[in-house]
Image (cartoon, rainbow, N blue to C red; front, side):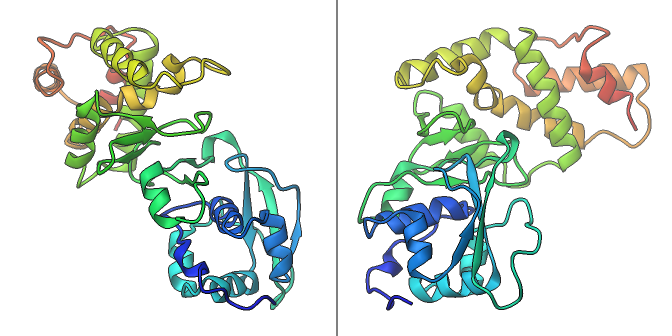
Length: 289
């Protein structure tokens, strides 16, 4: 096994960084590929290695121990920084140092990390990092310190969100996130509103225009910014709706209670009124117990 280099400690993982991303950045600091680094640590790798975020790597306990020794990062700290998503099946036999590359489905692929935060943790070479979003919030990455955000793995770099301060403000207010059920409903409802140009279309269209103007590098392919930026565009209202849904009573609402709820929600969304059509998913949620 290679001796522990003095500089390895300075390539630190970001919180929730994918293992493939961290290995790629760590290897790049020594002008190696991730496969070469694993080979040097006598870790047997299987599967096909490609660049993040399309693949993830799952390390056995012994492989994690060797990586920990190489980087001088305690195993417990390394495990917390590099979450296993999804949990891998058994890898090799007990005590063997093995790693398995696996394709990452688009729904669970990590997102590009804040470039400023990444540079602080890999000063030797500017290699992009990829992190998993927080599990208790919509599928986005927001760095409030450096005003960068990402919501789609098809974007190779995070976006500058300084022209849309409401994103940062909403993120800072989300100290006590809504329950997963309310958050799932809210995300589904605002996605439907966005796709069908309902209720908040003018606000979201303006927000999308400011975001794309500040980020001319956003690629038009394979999908337009209208689609790839949707989760970011609707983020503040999704959180507001999720919080409101969390406060619904456990019993069906009367007509008077429904009217009061919609009036209060309209106020929270800064709308003069909110009158969803009969087929609106919001009605379905109000009728679900």
